[in-house]
Image (cartoon, rainbow, N blue to C red; front, side, top):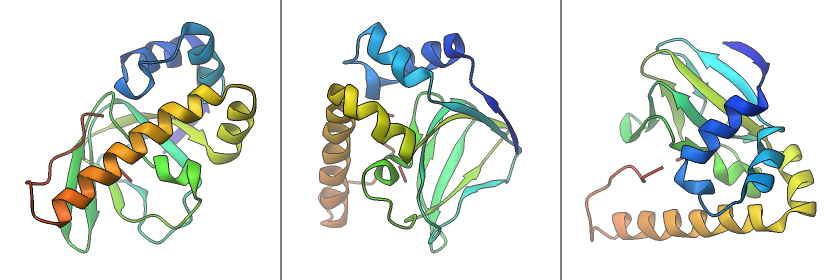
Length: 156
C-alpha cells in the first residue's frame, strides 16, 4: 500500500464524479478534497478487515474492490463508488472485508477529519446521512428477501 497526500485538484475531479457528493457546490467539494489522502493498493490486498475498528471512508478513484463477509460476496465496487461511510458516523467495527480485485487507488477521509469538516459545513454531513439511510433501507429490503442484492450506485 502506497500513501501520499491527495492533490486537491485530483481529489476534486474524483469527488465531482461521485454521485454521493453531487449536491455539494465547488467550495464544499474543495473543503472535502483538502482532507482526503490518496492510497494505492495492489491486487488481492485486504483494504479493510471485518471486525477492525472503522476509522475512515474510502472513495474509489481507480480500480475495483469486492466487499466480502463470511465467504459471501456482498458487493463489487468500482470508480466513483465508496465504502466505509458508516465509520465516519459511528466508529464501529467493520462489517465486511474489502479486497482489491485489481490495482486500486482510493481517496481516504478519516473520521476525525470528517468531524472537523462538518462542524463548519453541515451540508456535507447531510449528504452522507441521506445516502446512509438509502443504503440501510436497501439492505433491509435485501434481508427481507424483497429484492436481489446489488451494489449501490456508488459499502462498508
